[in-house]
Image (cartoon, rainbow, N blue to C red):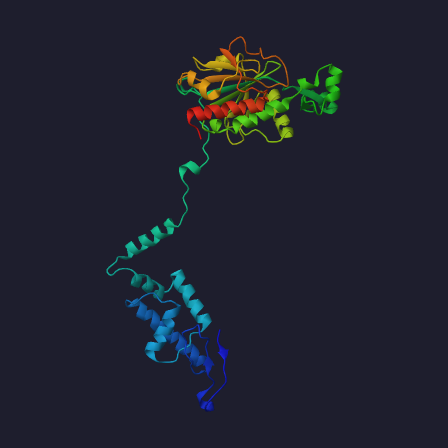
Length: 371
């Protein structure tokens, strides 16, 4: 911005404009508006033509240098300069095209200029490395894949997953459709204490939250994201469920309960975007789904304590490991005595099922070098 100063001399000379000390402009005579616009446009055009003939790119300081060389008063309007710079940046004017050719080396083809401009635009894109992209777990489906890839198999035994009919639809039942109006809920100790008391059952028998916590711990582990984990659920009623490593278990228990009710009634849960089954009921026994030569163990508090870093080195590298974990509040640990190789304890303290699953996964990640 410039400020008006005091006038001196005759009226024919006009008023004098004083500029701040930080700018390179010198005092110049005030001219009529039309004359100022004409001279500013002529001066700007001459500067761009000089640039096209082989000069350097023009910036704010070059305006003052051009004025000092010509020794003529010139005033460039702010609106005209902004309009000219916008048009030159868009590349729609011949002056902008001449500026591009002037900055390039001599005898440079136009195709090379366009390619260099495209490469400069692509270099500004931020590309993330392949390690930052979330990877989908690779699920071993065929028998050959299960045999060739050693992985961890976790079986949640004695899981408390049982449905209870809380209400029935009489109108729908009269039409002959028995299940459409019925409402079922997952039996749990928080919401169905009176029902459990009427049935003469212990409250600890209805603890589906233990299975929910174990699934969240297992499926969120780096071992599962590396595609080296398979989870099975064996309920207290004898239902065997296969869990796809790609499934996302609901975080809230209410949504998890609705999902388990739907699974136990429909026997499978499919993906929304595809036909792949994320949860499904399969045939017993669970050992029929294990690879050959699988090392099977049971986690028990009453067994000898083993340090995982030392114990895992005793298992051959080419063998998969199956771990049976009790997903109940309390009870005997004889649920897998018929087909396990040994029982071990991984801590001197009694651990919950979720903590035991996480501790074993962490030890195997260190053993297999998974970060």
